[in-house]
Amino acid sequence: MNPTYLLYGSAILSVVLLTAIIWLTYKLYQLDQVRKQFFSSPLKKDLEQVLVDQNRLLTKTVKDLSGLAEELTDLSILNKNNFQKIGVVRFNPFDDAGGNMSFALAILNHHNDGVVVSSLHGREGTRIYAKSIKAGASEHKLTEEEAEAIKSAT
Image 1: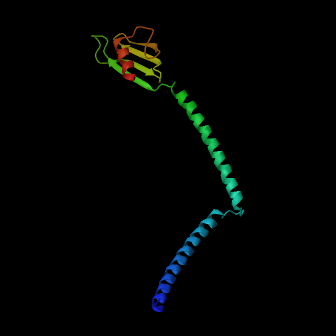
Image 2: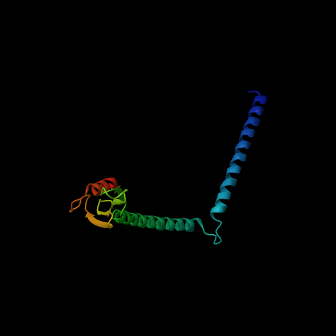
């Protein structure tokens, strides 16, 4: 074997190894910076204490999240009983009164339970009627406008 080739091969190998050493030194420096930031607590904790604290924090977070999920479920159930559907129909019930001053207003919850309020405006005055609604229907006879208001609410 020619000593010149051996010398060139050794030089190339030295350059490659020197590059690898420089790269590894840089990575070690980055890792040391992360370590310093991780342990930069004024109490100078050891790794075991940091992991115990993180585990305790994670356990508390999971417990809090579970509590929030239960509360969200409870609020979701309660919200279904709140009024959330509204339908309004304006109409003119009498030929002698001008304009659509009368109305039927349906206010329902998620289960289509609620109330329909009717206001009849005439020359003599305004009359207001309310009828309870269960599952989208009433035990009282509904006018065409009241039924339309319920339909528009659902």
